[in-house]
Amino acid sequence: MLGASMAGLLAARVLSESFANVTIFDRDTLPAGAANRKGVPQGEHSHGLLARGRQVLEELFPGLVAELTAQGGIPVDIMRDCVWIQGDAPMPRVASGLAGLCVSRPAIEAGVRRRVLALPNVVVLDGHEATGLLFDGVRVTGAQVLPAGGTVHDVAADLVVDATGRGNRGPTWLAAIGFERPAEERVDPLTVYVSRDYRRVPGREDFAAIITSPNPARPFGAVAIAAEGDRWMVTLLGVGSGQAPPSDPDAYAGFTANLPDPRLHELLSTAEPLGPPMRMRLPASVRRRYERMTRLPDGLVSIGDAICSFNPAYGQGMTVAAAEAMELRDALRAGRAGLPRRFYAKAAKVVDVPWDIAVGADLANPEIQGERTGKTRFLNAYVAKIQVASSRSAAVGRRFLEVANLMKAPPSLFAPSVVARVLWHSRTPSSPAPAVRTPDRVPV
Image 1: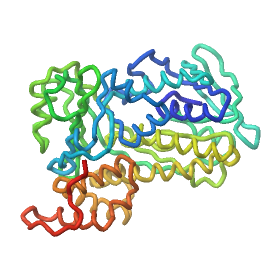
Image 2 (image 1 turned 135 degrees about the horizontal axis):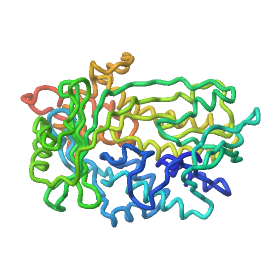
Image 3 (image 1 turned 45 degrees about the vertical axis):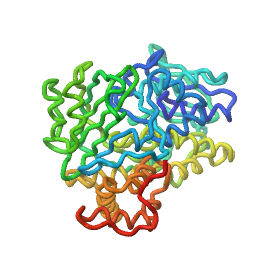
Image 4 (image 1 turned 90 degrees about the vertical axis):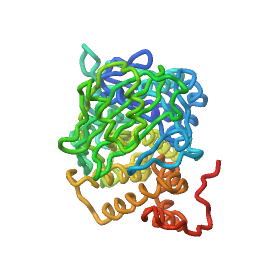
């Protein structure tokens, strides 16, 4: 296993069911607990665990959510306990049954790493960097590994999993052993994050998160998530030229006065900052099309950001990695022969939904460079209507969140009852209410 990222740790948990020994190599010196590290530069910014991600973690590590909750994490109903502003008005806040978790990325990773290290057949070797693959002419038989301060040595393996993240060299390694590089799709979201932590007084606010998504008419937004340590993890984001949020501590809270909902500005106007603002220019979103390659070596699969790295503004990375780990588990249960092709075919279906959501939303901004297909234009037009309708119909809002949380497939957004509500509620608010057979109220 190359990489002790969330994707790597989840894959190692799955591999522990099928292999006698699993060794994880990571070039970082891994922290003993919940702490930021060099290999996860986004760790200090706001993260959320979507419903499908929480579901997978509970299946692979029973009781983990309770452990994280005991450490200060906050279990939430993603619709009832969070304020969602997709357009310029919030969704109704009603019980949806979508269970999420508000907690920092380092805390989640530390909890998962602790559980993985407790497995009797898993070993983690930090300070070890993967530098290449071993290949016998037919299959990948291991990896070359460089320990800190040491020399490169060969490590034999029945299966190598590349979980080395956004900057992975998997395509280069494949080319070095005579295989084509996977085709890539790349979109630069032109997005800047500026994050800052604030002290949180438990019980003062009636929400655990507030998410204001940018849109073409308002190319900036914000996220605030309650996290362990009685903190608000706040991230401001701007898309395109001249939209970067301020890194100046004195101007930081003032930026939120321009948001359509006043609650975040009111929160930051009185909350105590816990540190300076931290700036991050988001890298390009990249999807590697391993599933389309005509030749694949056995003995090697990539997972997580090594397959597809998303614009993190949509909070999908950890959840997609969790869903991919479950597909890897199923692919292994069907046997090791032909494993890469089976896995990549399934992983591609996992990636399709969040990729279309994230890239489609990015391409709605005319400044973003990328191919705008007929499908992209149609989906963006429909999603724009969904965003308006979500502020007026709890049923539409819930269905949109079910898809965004990977709990339902996108075709569910085109169910006749949903389309009827979307078309009606995206009209002017002065129109009289229609007679709809299924009520908008979301069952509690």
